[in-house]
Amino acid sequence: MNWKCLFVHKWNGCKCEKCGKIRDYEDEHQYVPVEGKCVEKCSICGKEQTISHAWNGCKCVQCGAVRDIHAWNGCKCVQCGAVRDILHKWNGGCKCELCGITRDEGVHKWLYLENECVENCSICGKQRIRHKWTFLENKCIEECSICGKQRIRHKWVKLENECIDRCSTCGEERSIGHIWKYRIQYEEIYGEWGTSANKYYHIKYCTVCGKSEEEKHELSNKNKCIDKCICGFNIEEHNWQHNVRVRNGPGYMMGKRCTCCGKEVIYGM
Image (cartoon, rainbow, N blue to C red; front, side):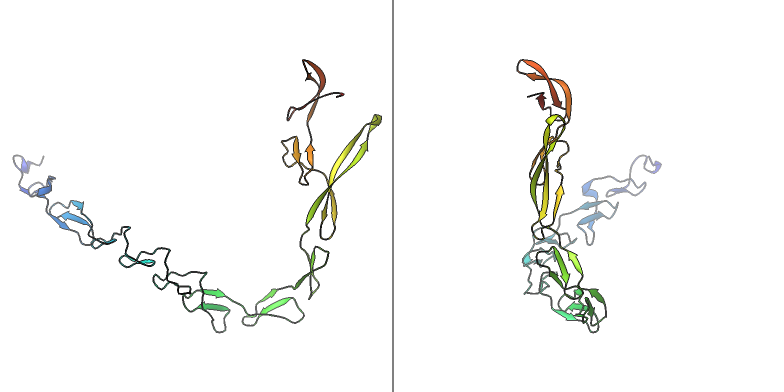
């Protein structure tokens, strides 16, 4: 305790004039409003407290705060200037007459800048590069008549019954990709002791140029024993464990079991 106020404080509202102690009694603070804020401050101790906003529609006239109760004129609030993305006034152009926002899908009014490869929109000021291309005679080159920039530009013509385009000017060719279909094939493979097995594979062929290639069937999911190849053929490839006891009715016989899917086959059956 400050010895100046050992027996009694000398209060001036909320503050002791002798020792500076503050007491927080609301009726003893002398609040004055703070300019530009919804806050009032005690002129004696400096304590601040918020006060109610003075709303004029969506905007507080004291502090400028905005609430979502707007006075819309189309896309723009006439009180606070907020903009919403509906009811723009485009008038068929690229710039809203109310809020000034621009859009790319609008109708720009493009004007060429003199001696430059640039167009400028006279409404919104947007710019874009725009060369004036012309073909050089007997060459696969276009040249800008303003800046002189060049670019390769072939005149491609598709060859009949071929998966190839050919340039009508220089003769250069490019592949345009095959359109594949599949045809399933098999052949019988003979082994020892009169055994045989069918080897299945597929031929893929282009429906345009007729090119064909032989391919082995492939499982699309290596963790499955039964699957479909891209050509639609059902593939069954097991990982057999041989000479195991396989259940046959109430008893067992010797056979093989797939370690992946558990399928069992009895020898000789």
